[in-house]
Image (cartoon, rainbow, N blue to C red; front, side, top):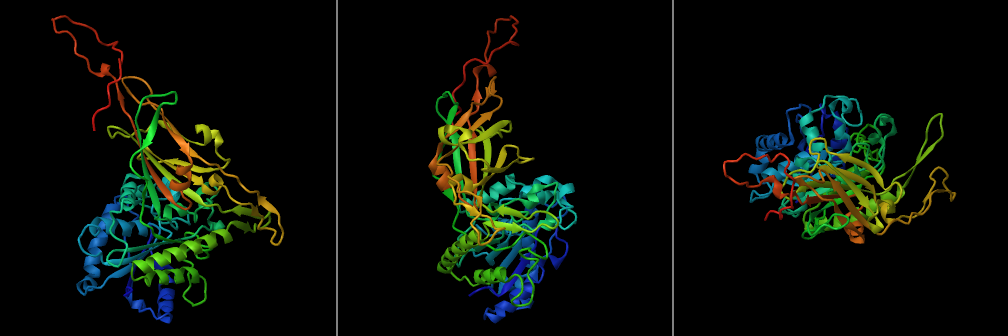
Length: 502
Protein backbone atom coordinates (compact mmCIF):
# COMPACT_ATOMS: atom_id res chain seq x y z
CA UNK A 1 0.00 0.00 0.00
CA UNK A 2 1.49 3.37 -1.02
CA UNK A 3 1.94 5.87 1.82
CA UNK A 4 -0.90 8.28 2.60
CA UNK A 5 1.16 10.75 4.60
CA UNK A 6 3.89 12.86 3.01
CA UNK A 7 6.43 14.91 4.96
CA UNK A 8 8.24 17.73 3.15
CA UNK A 9 11.78 18.48 4.37
CA UNK A 10 13.28 21.73 3.10
CA UNK A 11 16.86 22.61 2.28
CA UNK A 12 19.65 24.60 3.93
CA UNK A 13 19.06 28.11 5.27
CA UNK A 14 15.34 28.09 4.47
CA UNK A 15 13.22 30.24 6.78
CA UNK A 16 9.80 30.16 5.12
CA UNK A 17 7.53 27.49 3.62
CA UNK A 18 7.31 29.62 0.45
CA UNK A 19 10.29 27.55 -0.65
CA UNK A 20 7.89 24.66 -1.37
CA UNK A 21 6.04 26.76 -3.92
CA UNK A 22 2.73 25.17 -4.83
CA UNK A 23 4.12 21.66 -5.10
CA UNK A 24 2.16 20.31 -2.09
CA UNK A 25 -1.17 21.51 -3.51
CA UNK A 26 -0.34 20.29 -7.03
CA UNK A 27 0.77 16.92 -5.73
CA UNK A 28 -2.40 16.44 -3.68
CA UNK A 29 -4.65 17.46 -6.58
CA UNK A 30 -2.96 15.20 -9.12
CA UNK A 31 -2.83 12.33 -6.64
CA UNK A 32 -6.59 12.65 -6.19
CA UNK A 33 -7.14 12.71 -9.96
CA UNK A 34 -4.99 9.60 -10.33
CA UNK A 35 -6.85 7.78 -7.57
CA UNK A 36 -3.92 7.87 -5.18
CA UNK A 37 -5.17 8.30 -1.56
CA UNK A 38 -3.18 11.41 -0.70
CA UNK A 39 -4.99 14.44 0.71
CA UNK A 40 -3.66 17.93 1.40
CA UNK A 41 -4.23 17.61 5.13
CA UNK A 42 -1.86 14.68 5.13
CA UNK A 43 1.03 16.80 3.86
CA UNK A 44 3.29 17.87 6.73
CA UNK A 45 5.74 20.72 6.13
CA UNK A 46 8.85 20.48 8.24
CA UNK A 47 10.71 23.36 9.81
CA UNK A 48 14.23 22.89 11.05
CA UNK A 49 17.06 25.25 11.81
CA UNK A 50 20.06 24.96 9.49
CA UNK A 51 21.27 28.56 9.57
CA UNK A 52 22.85 28.60 13.04
CA UNK A 53 26.58 27.89 13.14
CA UNK A 54 26.40 25.49 16.08
CA UNK A 55 23.88 23.15 14.38
CA UNK A 56 25.51 20.16 12.69
CA UNK A 57 24.08 17.34 10.59
CA UNK A 58 24.12 14.91 13.53
CA UNK A 59 22.08 17.40 15.55
CA UNK A 60 19.51 17.60 12.77
CA UNK A 61 19.26 13.81 12.54
CA UNK A 62 18.68 13.53 16.29
CA UNK A 63 16.15 16.36 16.26
CA UNK A 64 14.33 14.76 13.31
CA UNK A 65 14.03 11.48 15.19
CA UNK A 66 12.48 13.27 18.15
CA UNK A 67 10.14 15.26 15.90
CA UNK A 68 8.96 12.08 14.19
CA UNK A 69 8.27 10.40 17.50
CA UNK A 70 6.51 13.47 18.89
CA UNK A 71 4.50 14.72 15.91
CA UNK A 72 3.90 11.52 13.94
CA UNK A 73 3.72 9.14 16.86
CA UNK A 74 0.06 8.42 16.12
CA UNK A 75 1.04 7.05 12.70
CA UNK A 76 3.75 4.88 14.19
CA UNK A 77 1.34 3.58 16.83
CA UNK A 78 -1.11 2.62 14.08
CA UNK A 79 1.62 0.86 12.12
CA UNK A 80 1.38 3.37 9.29
CA UNK A 81 4.47 4.55 7.45
CA UNK A 82 5.02 7.84 5.65
CA UNK A 83 6.88 9.21 2.64
CA UNK A 84 9.38 12.06 2.73
CA UNK A 85 9.95 14.58 -0.05
CA UNK A 86 13.07 16.68 0.34
CA UNK A 87 14.81 19.52 -1.43
CA UNK A 88 18.56 20.16 -1.51
CA UNK A 89 20.14 19.59 1.93
CA UNK A 90 16.91 18.00 3.13
CA UNK A 91 18.00 14.83 1.30
CA UNK A 92 21.18 14.26 3.35
CA UNK A 93 19.28 15.21 6.53
CA UNK A 94 16.68 12.49 5.96
CA UNK A 95 19.37 9.98 4.94
CA UNK A 96 21.45 10.73 8.04
CA UNK A 97 18.37 10.30 10.24
CA UNK A 98 17.43 7.00 8.63
CA UNK A 99 20.99 5.64 8.86
CA UNK A 100 21.66 6.71 12.43
CA UNK A 101 18.37 5.64 13.99
CA UNK A 102 16.76 3.03 11.79
CA UNK A 103 19.26 1.20 9.55
CA UNK A 104 20.18 -1.27 12.30
CA UNK A 105 17.07 -1.00 14.45
CA UNK A 106 15.77 -4.46 13.63
CA UNK A 107 12.42 -3.08 12.50
CA UNK A 108 11.10 -1.15 9.52
CA UNK A 109 11.87 2.55 9.33
CA UNK A 110 8.67 4.63 9.53
CA UNK A 111 9.79 6.28 6.28
CA UNK A 112 8.89 4.02 3.38
CA UNK A 113 9.71 6.33 0.43
CA UNK A 114 12.38 9.05 0.21
CA UNK A 115 11.94 11.30 -2.83
CA UNK A 116 14.85 13.76 -3.06
CA UNK A 117 14.68 16.83 -5.30
CA UNK A 118 18.11 18.20 -6.24
CA UNK A 119 19.76 16.65 -3.16
CA UNK A 120 23.34 17.49 -2.21
CA UNK A 121 24.08 13.84 -1.39
CA UNK A 122 27.81 14.15 -2.13
CA UNK A 123 27.94 17.86 -1.31
CA UNK A 124 28.11 21.03 -3.36
CA UNK A 125 31.05 22.90 -4.84
CA UNK A 126 29.46 26.14 -3.62
CA UNK A 127 29.82 25.10 0.03
CA UNK A 128 33.51 25.97 -0.04
CA UNK A 129 32.80 29.63 -0.64
CA UNK A 130 31.98 30.27 3.01
CA UNK A 131 29.11 31.97 4.74
CA UNK A 132 29.83 35.53 3.68
CA UNK A 133 29.90 34.89 -0.06
CA UNK A 134 27.08 32.35 -0.02
CA UNK A 135 24.69 34.63 1.83
CA UNK A 136 24.26 36.83 -1.25
CA UNK A 137 23.70 34.03 -3.78
CA UNK A 138 19.98 33.97 -4.46
CA UNK A 139 20.20 30.56 -6.12
CA UNK A 140 21.61 29.08 -2.92
CA UNK A 141 20.05 30.65 0.14
CA UNK A 142 17.80 33.49 -0.93
CA UNK A 143 19.79 36.04 1.01
CA UNK A 144 19.13 34.58 4.47
CA UNK A 145 21.68 33.77 7.16
CA UNK A 146 23.83 30.70 6.66
CA UNK A 147 25.02 28.05 9.10
CA UNK A 148 28.62 26.89 9.19
CA UNK A 149 27.91 23.54 10.85
CA UNK A 150 25.75 22.23 8.01
CA UNK A 151 27.95 24.00 5.46
CA UNK A 152 30.92 21.95 6.67
CA UNK A 153 29.03 18.73 5.90
CA UNK A 154 28.09 20.00 2.45
CA UNK A 155 31.65 20.66 1.31
CA UNK A 156 32.79 17.98 -1.14
CA UNK A 157 34.77 15.26 0.63
CA UNK A 158 33.85 16.20 4.20
CA UNK A 159 34.54 13.51 6.79
CA UNK A 160 30.87 13.36 7.77
CA UNK A 161 29.67 13.18 4.18
CA UNK A 162 32.23 10.48 3.33
CA UNK A 163 31.10 8.41 6.32
CA UNK A 164 27.43 8.44 5.33
CA UNK A 165 28.12 7.78 1.66
CA UNK A 166 30.58 4.99 2.36
CA UNK A 167 27.94 3.33 4.54
CA UNK A 168 25.49 3.67 1.66
CA UNK A 169 27.92 2.18 -0.87
CA UNK A 170 28.76 -0.67 1.53
CA UNK A 171 25.00 -1.38 1.78
CA UNK A 172 24.74 -0.63 5.48
CA UNK A 173 21.67 1.61 5.19
CA UNK A 174 19.09 -1.14 5.08
CA UNK A 175 17.27 -2.90 2.24
CA UNK A 176 15.53 -1.28 -0.72
CA UNK A 177 12.23 -3.15 -0.60
CA UNK A 178 8.83 -3.08 1.05
CA UNK A 179 10.50 -3.66 4.44
CA UNK A 180 13.09 -0.93 3.93
CA UNK A 181 13.20 2.47 2.27
CA UNK A 182 12.72 3.19 -1.43
CA UNK A 183 15.06 6.10 -2.39
CA UNK A 184 14.57 8.31 -5.46
CA UNK A 185 16.58 11.23 -6.84
CA UNK A 186 15.03 13.78 -9.19
CA UNK A 187 17.29 16.61 -10.34
CA UNK A 188 17.85 18.98 -13.23
CA UNK A 189 20.81 20.34 -15.16
CA UNK A 190 19.37 23.67 -16.29
CA UNK A 191 20.95 26.97 -15.31
CA UNK A 192 18.71 29.90 -14.49
CA UNK A 193 20.95 32.58 -15.97
CA UNK A 194 19.41 35.43 -13.99
CA UNK A 195 20.88 33.85 -10.84
CA UNK A 196 24.36 33.70 -12.37
CA UNK A 197 26.99 35.40 -10.22
CA UNK A 198 29.84 36.75 -12.33
CA UNK A 199 32.22 36.42 -9.37
CA UNK A 200 31.44 32.74 -8.97
CA UNK A 201 31.33 30.48 -12.02
CA UNK A 202 29.82 27.60 -10.02
CA UNK A 203 26.39 29.25 -10.30
CA UNK A 204 26.53 28.64 -14.06
CA UNK A 205 28.48 25.39 -14.03
CA UNK A 206 27.44 22.89 -16.70
CA UNK A 207 26.64 19.47 -15.30
CA UNK A 208 24.83 21.08 -12.38
CA UNK A 209 21.58 22.86 -11.59
CA UNK A 210 23.45 25.99 -10.53
CA UNK A 211 24.03 24.71 -6.98
CA UNK A 212 24.30 20.91 -6.93
CA UNK A 213 26.14 18.86 -9.53
CA UNK A 214 24.09 16.09 -11.13
CA UNK A 215 26.71 13.50 -10.17
CA UNK A 216 26.66 14.72 -6.55
CA UNK A 217 22.88 14.34 -6.38
CA UNK A 218 22.79 10.81 -7.79
CA UNK A 219 22.94 8.03 -5.18
CA UNK A 220 24.34 5.54 -7.69
CA UNK A 221 28.02 5.55 -6.74
CA UNK A 222 31.16 3.44 -6.41
CA UNK A 223 34.15 3.12 -4.11
CA UNK A 224 37.62 1.71 -4.72
CA UNK A 225 40.54 1.29 -2.32
CA UNK A 226 44.13 1.62 -3.57
CA UNK A 227 47.06 0.74 -1.29
CA UNK A 228 50.74 1.44 -1.99
CA UNK A 229 52.78 -1.74 -1.77
CA UNK A 230 55.83 -3.36 -3.31
CA UNK A 231 59.37 -2.23 -4.04
CA UNK A 232 60.18 1.24 -5.33
CA UNK A 233 60.66 1.63 -9.09
CA UNK A 234 61.62 4.56 -11.25
CA UNK A 235 58.11 5.98 -10.86
CA UNK A 236 57.83 5.29 -7.14
CA UNK A 237 55.74 2.53 -5.56
CA UNK A 238 52.65 1.31 -7.36
CA UNK A 239 49.15 1.53 -5.93
CA UNK A 240 47.38 -1.82 -5.87
CA UNK A 241 43.60 -2.28 -5.73
CA UNK A 242 42.45 -3.99 -2.54
CA UNK A 243 39.28 -6.01 -2.84
CA UNK A 244 36.61 -5.48 -5.45
CA UNK A 245 35.16 -2.23 -6.66
CA UNK A 246 32.25 -1.56 -4.33
CA UNK A 247 29.07 -0.35 -5.98
CA UNK A 248 26.06 1.06 -4.21
CA UNK A 249 22.64 -0.52 -4.48
CA UNK A 250 20.88 0.51 -7.64
CA UNK A 251 18.89 3.66 -6.95
CA UNK A 252 16.16 5.34 -8.99
CA UNK A 253 17.54 8.46 -10.68
CA UNK A 254 15.76 10.82 -13.08
CA UNK A 255 16.82 14.00 -14.86
CA UNK A 256 13.99 16.55 -14.96
CA UNK A 257 13.94 18.64 -18.13
CA UNK A 258 14.52 22.37 -17.74
CA UNK A 259 14.89 22.25 -13.96
CA UNK A 260 17.34 24.35 -11.96
CA UNK A 261 18.00 24.26 -8.23
CA UNK A 262 15.76 27.11 -7.15
CA UNK A 263 13.77 30.07 -8.35
CA UNK A 264 10.18 30.74 -9.38
CA UNK A 265 10.82 30.17 -13.09
CA UNK A 266 12.92 26.99 -13.26
CA UNK A 267 13.35 25.76 -9.68
CA UNK A 268 12.63 22.05 -9.46
CA UNK A 269 10.30 22.64 -6.50
CA UNK A 270 9.67 26.37 -6.26
CA UNK A 271 8.43 26.75 -9.86
CA UNK A 272 5.67 24.12 -9.63
CA UNK A 273 2.24 25.72 -9.85
CA UNK A 274 -0.93 24.35 -8.28
CA UNK A 275 -3.03 24.36 -11.45
CA UNK A 276 -3.14 21.07 -13.30
CA UNK A 277 -1.39 21.35 -16.65
CA UNK A 278 0.73 24.25 -15.46
CA UNK A 279 4.48 24.38 -15.00
CA UNK A 280 6.01 21.53 -13.01
CA UNK A 281 4.00 18.66 -14.41
CA UNK A 282 7.06 16.55 -15.16
CA UNK A 283 8.41 16.58 -11.60
CA UNK A 284 4.96 16.13 -10.05
CA UNK A 285 4.24 13.13 -12.27
CA UNK A 286 7.63 11.63 -11.41
CA UNK A 287 6.99 12.07 -7.67
CA UNK A 288 3.62 10.32 -7.94
CA UNK A 289 5.24 7.43 -9.78
CA UNK A 290 7.75 7.17 -6.93
CA UNK A 291 5.05 7.18 -4.27
CA UNK A 292 3.16 4.37 -6.02
CA UNK A 293 6.08 1.92 -5.78
CA UNK A 294 4.98 -0.96 -3.54
CA UNK A 295 7.68 -3.63 -3.83
CA UNK A 296 11.14 -4.44 -5.18
CA UNK A 297 9.77 -5.38 -8.62
CA UNK A 298 7.98 -2.02 -8.91
CA UNK A 299 11.17 -0.26 -7.88
CA UNK A 300 13.34 -2.10 -10.43
CA UNK A 301 10.84 -1.31 -13.19
CA UNK A 302 10.84 2.38 -12.26
CA UNK A 303 14.66 2.41 -12.22
CA UNK A 304 14.62 1.07 -15.79
CA UNK A 305 12.04 3.62 -16.89
CA UNK A 306 13.89 6.50 -15.24
CA UNK A 307 17.16 5.46 -16.89
CA UNK A 308 15.55 5.57 -20.33
CA UNK A 309 13.84 8.89 -19.63
CA UNK A 310 17.06 10.39 -18.25
CA UNK A 311 18.84 9.52 -21.48
CA UNK A 312 16.05 11.18 -23.47
CA UNK A 313 16.32 14.37 -21.40
CA UNK A 314 20.12 14.38 -21.67
CA UNK A 315 19.97 14.10 -25.46
CA UNK A 316 17.24 16.74 -25.77
CA UNK A 317 19.24 19.19 -23.62
CA UNK A 318 22.63 18.44 -25.15
CA UNK A 319 22.76 21.77 -26.95
CA UNK A 320 21.35 24.89 -25.29
CA UNK A 321 20.52 28.16 -27.02
CA UNK A 322 20.63 31.15 -24.68
CA UNK A 323 19.08 34.38 -25.93
CA UNK A 324 21.12 37.34 -24.66
CA UNK A 325 19.59 40.80 -24.81
CA UNK A 326 21.68 43.43 -26.59
CA UNK A 327 24.43 40.90 -27.28
CA UNK A 328 25.17 37.80 -29.28
CA UNK A 329 23.19 34.66 -28.42
CA UNK A 330 25.20 31.95 -26.71
CA UNK A 331 25.35 28.18 -27.21
CA UNK A 332 26.13 25.70 -24.45
CA UNK A 333 26.91 21.99 -24.49
CA UNK A 334 25.59 19.88 -21.61
CA UNK A 335 27.94 16.91 -21.38
CA UNK A 336 27.59 14.07 -18.92
CA UNK A 337 29.94 14.70 -15.99
CA UNK A 338 31.48 12.54 -13.27
CA UNK A 339 32.63 13.35 -9.74
CA UNK A 340 35.69 11.61 -8.26
CA UNK A 341 36.56 12.22 -4.60
CA UNK A 342 40.05 11.13 -3.49
CA UNK A 343 40.97 10.64 0.17
CA UNK A 344 44.68 10.15 0.85
CA UNK A 345 45.94 8.78 4.16
CA UNK A 346 49.07 6.82 5.11
CA UNK A 347 49.51 3.28 6.39
CA UNK A 348 49.25 4.48 9.99
CA UNK A 349 46.01 6.34 9.37
CA UNK A 350 47.49 9.85 9.30
CA UNK A 351 46.12 12.28 6.69
CA UNK A 352 48.49 13.15 3.85
CA UNK A 353 47.80 16.79 3.06
CA UNK A 354 50.87 17.99 1.15
CA UNK A 355 50.81 16.36 -2.28
CA UNK A 356 50.24 16.75 -5.99
CA UNK A 357 47.73 14.41 -7.64
CA UNK A 358 47.59 14.14 -11.41
CA UNK A 359 45.32 12.07 -13.60
CA UNK A 360 47.10 10.27 -16.42
CA UNK A 361 46.24 8.70 -19.74
CA UNK A 362 48.12 6.33 -22.04
CA UNK A 363 51.75 5.72 -21.07
CA UNK A 364 50.80 7.10 -17.63
CA UNK A 365 51.19 10.56 -19.08
CA UNK A 366 48.87 13.43 -18.06
CA UNK A 367 49.31 14.91 -21.54
CA UNK A 368 47.40 11.97 -23.04
CA UNK A 369 44.05 13.18 -21.74
CA UNK A 370 41.60 15.24 -23.83
CA UNK A 371 41.57 19.01 -23.60
CA UNK A 372 38.86 20.25 -21.24
CA UNK A 373 38.33 16.89 -19.49
CA UNK A 374 38.91 18.44 -16.04
CA UNK A 375 36.15 20.94 -15.32
CA UNK A 376 37.10 21.67 -11.71
CA UNK A 377 39.26 20.57 -8.80
CA UNK A 378 38.77 21.33 -5.10
CA UNK A 379 40.56 20.51 -1.87
CA UNK A 380 38.38 20.23 1.23
CA UNK A 381 39.24 23.17 3.49
CA UNK A 382 38.93 21.20 6.76
CA UNK A 383 39.95 17.71 5.59
CA UNK A 384 42.84 18.67 3.36
CA UNK A 385 43.63 15.05 2.57
CA UNK A 386 40.49 15.00 0.40
CA UNK A 387 40.50 16.19 -3.23
CA UNK A 388 37.50 16.36 -5.56
CA UNK A 389 37.80 16.21 -9.35
CA UNK A 390 34.86 17.14 -11.61
CA UNK A 391 35.41 15.35 -14.93
CA UNK A 392 33.77 15.70 -18.32
CA UNK A 393 32.89 12.05 -18.88
CA UNK A 394 31.75 12.53 -22.48
CA UNK A 395 35.07 14.09 -23.48
CA UNK A 396 36.91 11.29 -21.69
CA UNK A 397 35.18 8.37 -23.37
CA UNK A 398 34.27 10.06 -26.63
CA UNK A 399 30.99 11.42 -27.94
CA UNK A 400 29.25 12.32 -31.21
CA UNK A 401 29.22 15.76 -32.76
CA UNK A 402 26.93 18.46 -31.40
CA UNK A 403 24.95 20.68 -33.78
CA UNK A 404 24.55 24.37 -33.08
CA UNK A 405 21.15 24.88 -31.37
CA UNK A 406 21.12 28.51 -32.52
CA UNK A 407 20.50 27.34 -36.09
CA UNK A 408 17.72 24.74 -35.91
CA UNK A 409 17.18 22.82 -39.12
CA UNK A 410 20.75 23.42 -40.26
CA UNK A 411 23.69 21.10 -39.87
CA UNK A 412 26.04 23.66 -38.36
CA UNK A 413 28.53 21.87 -36.13
CA UNK A 414 29.01 23.42 -32.70
CA UNK A 415 31.55 20.77 -31.67
CA UNK A 416 32.90 17.93 -33.81
CA UNK A 417 32.91 14.31 -32.75
CA UNK A 418 35.27 13.68 -29.85
CA UNK A 419 37.42 10.51 -29.96
CA UNK A 420 38.02 10.25 -26.22
CA UNK A 421 40.72 8.11 -24.63
CA UNK A 422 41.02 4.46 -23.66
CA UNK A 423 42.75 4.69 -20.29
CA UNK A 424 42.79 6.52 -16.99
CA UNK A 425 45.34 6.34 -14.19
CA UNK A 426 46.88 8.60 -11.59
CA UNK A 427 50.16 9.81 -10.16
CA UNK A 428 50.78 11.16 -6.65
CA UNK A 429 53.83 13.11 -5.52
CA UNK A 430 53.54 13.41 -1.72
CA UNK A 431 55.66 15.46 0.63
CA UNK A 432 57.93 15.15 2.53
CA UNK A 433 59.75 12.92 0.05
CA UNK A 434 62.89 12.46 2.17
CA UNK A 435 64.04 12.56 5.79
CA UNK A 436 63.45 10.37 8.84
CA UNK A 437 59.78 9.86 7.96
CA UNK A 438 58.55 10.45 4.43
CA UNK A 439 56.52 9.14 1.50
CA UNK A 440 57.37 7.82 -1.93
CA UNK A 441 55.75 8.70 -5.23
CA UNK A 442 52.73 6.58 -6.05
CA UNK A 443 51.29 5.55 -9.40
CA UNK A 444 48.27 3.66 -10.56
CA UNK A 445 48.79 2.48 -14.12
CA UNK A 446 46.23 3.80 -16.57
CA UNK A 447 43.62 1.19 -17.47
CA UNK A 448 40.45 1.11 -19.53
CA UNK A 449 38.65 -0.60 -16.63
CA UNK A 450 39.05 2.40 -14.33
CA UNK A 451 37.69 4.71 -17.00
CA UNK A 452 34.83 2.54 -18.27
CA UNK A 453 33.68 0.58 -15.22
CA UNK A 454 34.53 2.69 -12.18
CA UNK A 455 34.07 6.29 -13.34
CA UNK A 456 30.53 6.47 -14.73
CA UNK A 457 28.49 9.37 -16.16
CA UNK A 458 26.29 11.33 -13.71
CA UNK A 459 27.84 9.42 -10.79
CA UNK A 460 30.34 9.86 -7.94
CA UNK A 461 33.29 7.58 -7.22
CA UNK A 462 35.08 7.55 -3.85
CA UNK A 463 38.77 6.59 -4.16
CA UNK A 464 40.38 5.72 -0.82
CA UNK A 465 44.19 5.84 -1.23
CA UNK A 466 46.69 4.59 1.36
CA UNK A 467 50.37 5.58 1.01
CA UNK A 468 53.14 3.69 2.76
CA UNK A 469 54.61 5.70 5.64
CA UNK A 470 58.39 5.20 5.40
CA UNK A 471 60.20 5.34 8.76
CA UNK A 472 64.01 5.13 8.98
CA UNK A 473 66.01 3.49 11.72
CA UNK A 474 67.66 6.81 12.64
CA UNK A 475 64.43 7.86 14.35
CA UNK A 476 65.47 5.71 17.33
CA UNK A 477 69.02 4.39 17.99
CA UNK A 478 70.62 2.89 21.08
CA UNK A 479 74.11 4.17 21.92
CA UNK A 480 76.86 2.89 24.27
CA UNK A 481 76.24 3.52 27.97
CA UNK A 482 79.81 3.90 29.32
CA UNK A 483 79.45 7.23 31.07
CA UNK A 484 80.71 9.13 28.05
CA UNK A 485 78.80 11.96 26.52
CA UNK A 486 78.27 11.89 22.78
CA UNK A 487 76.56 14.16 20.25
CA UNK A 488 73.86 12.66 18.04
CA UNK A 489 72.56 15.94 16.57
CA UNK A 490 73.91 15.01 13.15
CA UNK A 491 72.31 11.56 13.00
CA UNK A 492 71.41 10.49 9.49
CA UNK A 493 68.11 8.74 8.73
CA UNK A 494 69.80 5.43 7.93
CA UNK A 495 68.04 2.53 6.16
CA UNK A 496 64.28 2.39 5.95
CA UNK A 497 62.54 0.12 8.43
CA UNK A 498 60.13 -2.54 7.20
CA UNK A 499 56.47 -1.51 7.20
CA UNK A 500 54.63 -2.03 10.46
CA UNK A 501 52.51 -5.17 10.58
CA UNK A 502 48.77 -4.63 10.26
